[in-house]
Length: 314
Image (cartoon, rainbow, N blue to C red; front, side, top):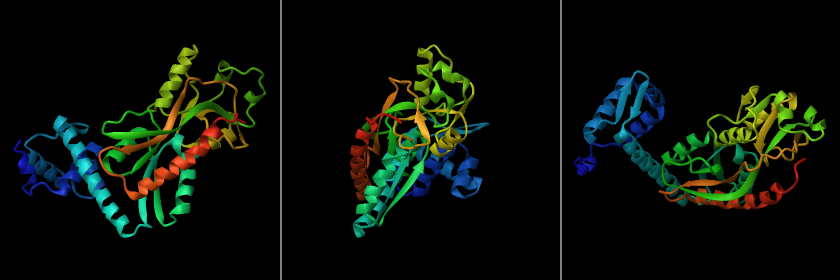
């Protein structure tokens, strides 16, 4: 490939947006819908980009498209460029008005219940005009958004491997516990054991999560099969309502629901299951002032959670 051809003016910003969207959607139809253009426009743009680069970026199949080795590599670079441009625009805006700004934070179950709300409260106390946008998703999806610059920081478990350059900081260690509603009959059992609980329905993390895999391994080590009567869910609001209204059993990070008088923990250890909760940041672009302010607030909030983690469950 003649590398200077990428700088001769034919490669446009729309080409970078197109390849990012095509890789994310996995089809021309999906990309066209996401970009609010027609399918011929997407197809023509892809042909133009492949002509500029001189390589095939996607393999076409009956179920859509998948990036070739060239497509995967170019997508990574396209996302990095788009992320840098997004950060540059926001950085300039924040320099122009130091009291205003926006930080977009991605989170999942382990970070969303206590750490992030407390950190946001700390942040807003000192920066009332700063806008915080919270987006929930699976760890894998959030990493893609972070790499693409759609979010600035991830707060949650530090277990999912990243494909691109990322910087991770642990804020505290969190255990996992078995939680039921305060009315649950298992609370009245003396010396309750894990096999005693298999007659009840369970709520487990989704099969794609690291915590789920750790639970499966724990059950195998205990000589037990995973409960067949189960719901897979990572929404705490849904989990809590099921705990309150039924005799379901849930596995939750230690700090979630710990101060809820309508929930209770069962005295069954799930050690060695546990994890670090912290932040994941992009390693290939500077942090905006708003992101740095949220980081400071997260450290402040996390300092108060370590002592709370050591308190015995209700």
